[in-house]
Length: 105
Image 1 (cartoon, rainbow, N blue to C red):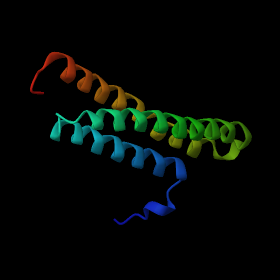
Image 2 (tube, rainbow, N blue to C red; image 1 turned 120 degrees about the vertical axis):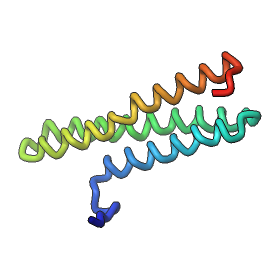
Image 3 (cartoon, rainbow, N blue to C red; image 1 turned 90 degrees about the vertical axis):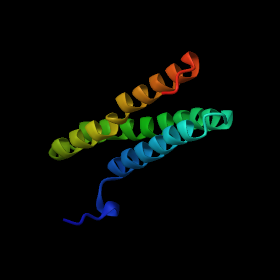
Image 4 (tube, rainbow, N blue to C red; image 1 turned 45 degrees about the horizontal axis):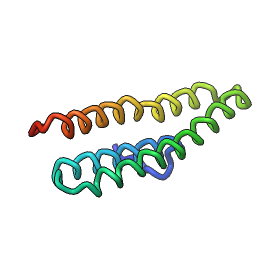
């Protein structure tokens, strides 16, 4: 089964790309633990991802209110977009734990 990524809703594309970039930066943190620049880049990425995904979330809420016929589709898009929040919190917890405890994890 082949899917065309560009045919998916923009919010779903954003969620997948945000997840991919965040996971890549998370992996870089552990691969190059001595580079503080990765933490700084990750911090700025998180700020920009929150901003962009927050704007998309507000657009989806607006669409949900205005487009009563498409509510099921919009709800699925909101759930996919919001799925990144617990993942980002988990990544942040692991990074903070790793920095503060001097553990090899």
